[in-house]
Image (cartoon, one colour):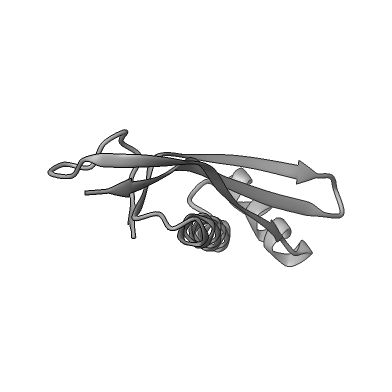
Amino acid sequence: MIISTTETIEGKKVTEYLGIVSGDAVMGTNIFRDIFAGIRDIVGGRSGSYEKELRTAKEAALEALEEEAAERGADAVVGVDLDYEVIGGDKSTMLIVSANGTAVRLS
């Protein structure tokens, strides 16, 4: 299945719009990762553990988006938008990734 942030797929014609589809992933972080990220905030640099968690959440959200589109009989999802949110406090932090787009059939 083609997943694209663009509104069209080059060389293909959209023959039917099947509606908006979405996929969400909510990932918890752990206290040790938070502690090491806090140290990174102080000394600088990238947080590899958070980057890995973010990548995992993005892949899970896109996979869920693709599954919903496939259930509708889509060939592609166009206009995909990824949104990121962090919720929580001192003891628990959750990362939310949401993928939304339009399921379509192509010719």
